[in-house]
Image (cartoon, rainbow, N blue to C red):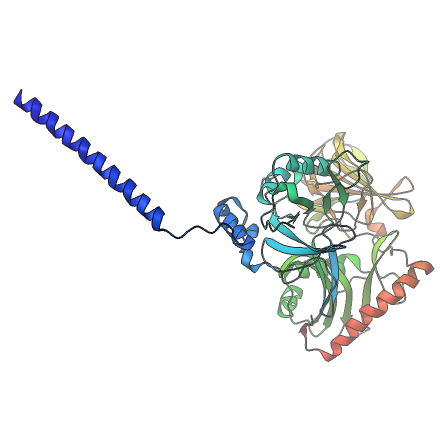
Length: 496
């Protein structure tokens, strides 16, 4: 009995002690709250944005984890109200995003009749396996607005077919100082693939259109900077370009032009000098992509100087001499970078049917997934599965030409019948679909309905510019030649 009473007294004292501890904690908190300095009722918008980013940093791709304190002012197109690409030459910016802006979040302003309205631009890079919805989530575009943007985009492209490495930009109004404006303040989204122009989805201001957002082709975000480059050839092309300020991506573009596009093909030798004018798309100080080699000049140790200036007209894009005559082959010498010819044009013993049959094309053996490129400028006729041909792409070109690409593993993203296709644009990937003994590309060429040996058209030149196009070309050519000749006064390397 005495033991039980002792235990009860011990429990009572323990309970009283616990109550005392709780009382002391509450008293201390009340004293701290009474004597503490009052919390500020407002917070600087950029501090709020930094706080938001830090709190959600684990949810963001690396490209969207910028410090908001690094954001800078820029300008956006007041006429279209959408992100776009401007031109910067000689250090004078005519672009739509400030080239000094850094990281994944940018602040910008748009001039209107009422003055300057502050805006926020966020950007991110698509990660492997992400669809459009997931990418928009990184930019804080969510809920009903996200669904409306996806619905508008889906009218032009398939939203589930985004590829890793693509870039997204989202622009928000922030006229009330809300630096981390949410979906309700969204003005525009740009989805830009690795090559070619992107899709712009803008908030709709047309009362006659029911949809909240409207998608249109084009509208790459960033500033296009024109860079001159003077490069002596010492060893391989890629190492020579790196010494002059280029990189692997630039070297690949130049190599394709020299070996596949120009006619006759040019082979550089030690001691030659290569001069380039290159357009680069920049997002702040970050290279988004090379827009292309606008001008190229080779000054060999012996022989004549070769100049190629790029021009786009109604028929497509090509390289021309200063007088407007074409210096470009009509077709790429082969529609893939790597691969060996395994079967030519004409009669052959079919490897599967084991009988003599006409072979209306050339076969290139290459690894599964090797990119396949459009052999010439044209329009997409079809991209579908067709019996023994497997996955087939058919393109229509000028002068009655048709090209066919068979046995593809899969098609490139965004192919829609009727779309314009540029020479060198990725249209699919090598596979072994249909009647095939292994991964390869069957490449066929028709003219006016008749199959031709693809090797027979490799020496045909793209048409020269028309008299009307030459008038437009003359002023552009004069400007490019001025840039090229101006390199005489510069040391070799990046002349930007």
